[in-house]
Image (cartoon, rainbow, N blue to C red; front, side, top):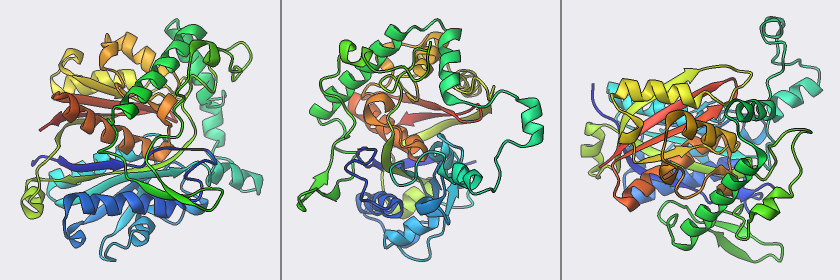
Length: 389
């Protein structure tokens, strides 16, 4: 079986809910990163054989197969097909896995893996909550209710995970402050410059400017200010400040095999070293990245000490903190440029977004191996290990 390589990776700067990217239709948001990938690689776009687009809430403006519609919105050749993947928060990481598996098999040579989510224009859960509101039922079937009488709740899962690993409110808040500190440092040092796709936005006064910096970063974040934020549930310890930010954004990666490298005449940024996906407890929900990482490292014949940088999605602060504790990881290697608490979590785009940041961070730091994982609704997790080239 042949190898899979990442030859280009980009993302938009995050936009806060009803913020700077609110005026961008999700088709066009996704189309912008696709168009930029073509520009970065300077290739004939007709050579692209498929686009696999992650989207966690594929309804409303994100419905009707946004993977295909984003190709058309980007002005790319009509010959390029597209499809949409939903593995909830891991949707675009799964898109990457599908794209890599496709080129590794030799079925195709050049595939784009991407993701998009406009949480402003398509609020989280809209496709199923709206259906239920209009009398079209719920995803909780009788058999599911019998097996899992306790409703699935990411907020409840965060509290359960914090209990399991002995994490108190102060630990979560300190982690949140550190996420913002890292994001501020990375932004001011220009660490995101090579991965962000500038987007033109219209301001309230009618003037335009380019959106080039993540909007959710709190430059004055402190333990005191974050500690004042109201708890999400009484008696808990998670808050909006130590959880990921609602975010609008898109990201994309071009994935090729050896034949694709020759056809495009481009140099690879990284090689896909290992891919794993695992299902786990859907009630606790958020601890799946731990056993999934154990499985991935075992299959790769590696230990956590072999990994130079980790991107563990900051859906809630207990997730990366529990992962670090369970894996015996080095905090200095974790989310070195901040994470979803400071930079935002655009659901279906986050997998591709984190991988884009990981690829560029490995290059910037001249490191070799990177690992990415994230918790996903339903108690699942994808893990991807890459090798910088």
